[in-house]
Image (cartoon, rainbow, N blue to C red; front, side, top):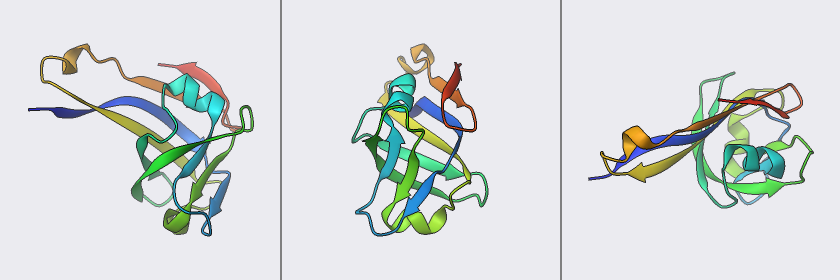
Length: 118
């Protein structure tokens, strides 16, 4: 049996865009991804604090230092620029491994720059 547990989170980031015409995904500043330990192509859950929606997608690395967090494709209908988002990545681990997994939470400022890691 495997458990799905939180391994990384970008907390209260600001959506910088919503691109309906792009072919899916969420574009996130590469520096922010590195701070959280999230990799390009990884599946993530995106929660919008403004309206309560949640959607699953995959990550595309954006320009380092840009602060970009753009929701693309159909999910762009769920997010408005300026909305606060939580981006979560998960791991599948055995029940024995779960207590040992230390999840990373990256707190950001209003420009989506990492300011603290929990």
